[in-house]
Length: 99
Image (cartoon, rainbow, N blue to C red; front, top):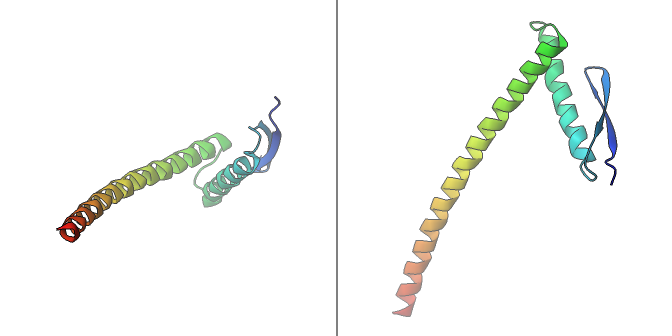
C-alpha cells in the first residue's frame, strides 16, 4: 500500500513527505505549526541560520509538549481522586437508603 505524499512549506522551502493515509490533515497542521514557530524565531532577528532556527523551534515545541503532558497527568490524577470521592459518597448514600 502506497503512502500519500503531502507537500508542505516551511520557511519558504517546499518538502514532500510520505504520510499514512488519513493523516494528511494532521501532517499539514503540524507543518503549519512548525512553520509559524520558525517564523517567529526568525523574525526576532536573534537567531541566524535555518538549522539553529529549526533546533530552537524543536526545543520550544518539545518543552510545550512536555509541559502539556505533565498538566494532563495532573488532571488525570485529580479526576481519579474526584471519582474515588464520588464513588465513596454514592456507596455511603446507597447504604443509607438500603437501611
